[in-house]
Image 1 (spheres, rainbow, N blue to C red):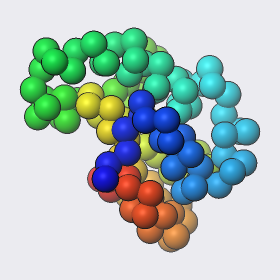
Image 2 (cartoon, rainbow, N blue to C red):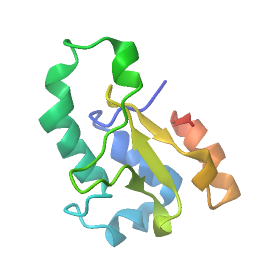
Image 3 (cartoon, one colour):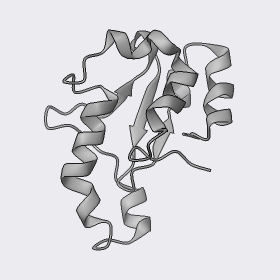
Length: 112
């Protein structure tokens, strides 16, 4: 089952991949934070879910106003992209530790 940024356990699932200390190193106000992307989705994408097709929204990846396209994982190595549907995807090419791709799959993240 995919992980969506607006689900109550989405941050917890990311912590299971990245480690408990991961969120201590990124402020919620940082444009690369989970909270910043959740706020962006709620402010700009939540309301358009019924205006566009699912296919269209799946082909859109959110960007912060400063151009930041991803959520940073632990140490800034791992990256997560958020689709217009709210689905959070783990970016395989940025996988810094071998076990993280496996953990991401176990938590339900789509690997791109």
